[in-house]
Image (cartoon, rainbow, N blue to C red):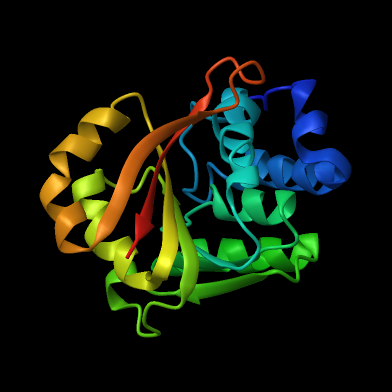
Length: 208
């Protein structure tokens, strides 16, 4: 098993008084993530910088309310954000049974009372547009993601989607879907500059 990356000094600054929970989750993911098919073999040596802090640094973008994480997987970003923002209610939406089992175990182990785990594909969400915002990380291209995330969000709510360096191009490629699903003011925001070696990028937009 690969050695887990040492905790960067900036982690405590990002998580504040919640740092112990972040350490507990990172240790569990580092120890069990590969064997349970949650992270690849190359990830433990960059778990903090590439995954945990990349997710956590966007926590201030969310307003208190109910936020969905589509395709939550290992809990990136949903569980990390739930640790960083206990004032927000998080709904982790994940179709795969073994990942749902992991998420449920971690919610219990960390004592998180602001998390609900829903086993479903976002396409099969049956509760209507009830979420205040939706996030996702490493799920699919924006043109594929918009049709499965926007219908979950209430009028005036937000999409806050973690993306890579090609985020601007993804917005251009998704122009038709953004229009069809009434998603407005789509733009790229860069978060964590000066904090992380590689800042996080999100596509942020309003659902009308």
